[in-house]
Image (tube, rainbow, N blue to C red; front, side, top):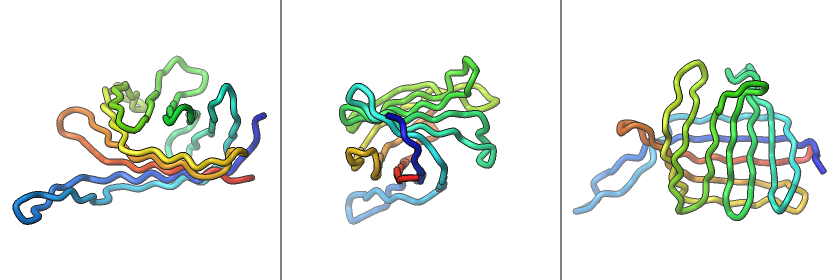
Length: 158
């Protein structure tokens, strides 16, 4: 059964730097960008998977875009697509230890290939679909751009 929920979606993007540490190097994360979205959405379960959906808003420059999170078998699939269009948008699956190569359609631009490696996924949703999901992944496109991302999705009663 679908139910309305409140969502708090936080995304933090980091640059990974190697800093000298004795005779070796240590990896340090430097926050580059962060975003927080508070919105209404829907949560439901079907065939042993949990689905969370919401409509993105004009306020963040993403009018008419629907986002779907699908949690299943220790992975999260993230799909973004423009409603009523054939545009692929974005479709990626994040599973710890897995490298995923996907195409991402940048709005009003061309699409790019993304390499996504998932470090960690924590799913703390209860049987009602409330709780928090956290995923830590590295995203890379071209040979010049590589960032570490931490995405948190908090599902709360509306």
